[in-house]
Length: 481
Image 1 (cartoon, rainbow, N blue to C red):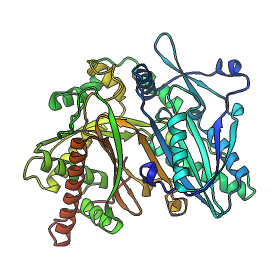
Image 2: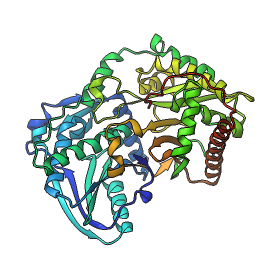
Image 3: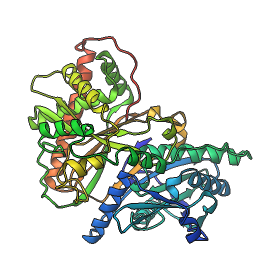
Image 4: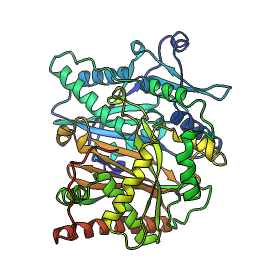
């Protein structure tokens, strides 16, 4: 899996077919039986979309993906696999409606009502034409306040085909795209072989949201569950941890965004860094977070790291193969004082993560509402926030076939008021995808940040090669998100 801007997704010339979800034939009969509450994430996302429309904000946000099917395409089998995919995951069959009381309701189609509307768009003569079409289609058709909330298509070539999908964030997170690739590829292969695909049952994200709402419906600002967050605010000075760099941004403004992916380490050097992490008894993502903290110290002078860390909420086996927005935002603190070595910073990261993980289930949206109500009306974070995300795509379902499928995650944010960083590991190395504001100070600051991270990694690897890393016994690293 690779996370890149759409311009670098590698679409080729070819014949395009697209599918969109059709409305149920008997709308009133179906929807009257399927009134479900939205999750906390979905409710806040929908409110932000309403605010953007009221502000007449011309902004595009979606999560895209693509993957290859080798050989001549069986279009009928692909469409059948896409239908099964939509039927399997309840959240894909949702529409959303704001009630007068303020609650957000999910109207859900039954699997029996699922029909896909197929459009044959004909041949597109160049990779540029294909890419421009997909970008324009996603920008135009994926809108939180309209329906359907996703588009699926395929670019057919003589010897292969590239499937692409675009989703509104209200439907899913990044790991859901991995689920989509594995689901469709598995069912397509079975159908082409003349087999009946195995019926895979996936837990519903709507059930997850319902359970979360019941658990935290009585949460209040003084609840013991929020003690960790109150402590973080007291230490950081705010619920939202500011990135300690001058990005040249004005409060309350959104700016056109840049989407940039760079390889920090090739596979050989990434393996060397992983060995360093193991020698110091830590996991890859914690070692990477320590590197980020050290780099930030070197360019900003900060002596303590305060930042946001998205954490997967798929620990329960029910959600392992589910499509949805299973991500909570947590805050982490650790020291990065001048003179602290990598092993010392790692120890701080481990201690900070241990505290964080004890509070992993408390929904950030509720924390925001209760502990920072002065910002809760905003449709985005109030100012540039320190944000770190990490995924190891070598350890997800279907990874052993990624060399053939060539899956890609394609995030789109046309505007931003911060600088987000998504680190990921795949078979080709360690990468950083970042989306940040397209203004001179922001570009310069993010360039310096990336360079400092790369320099810190290079110094650690060179030091290890010279025998500068003291070994400490540890077990093998585990998957972390």
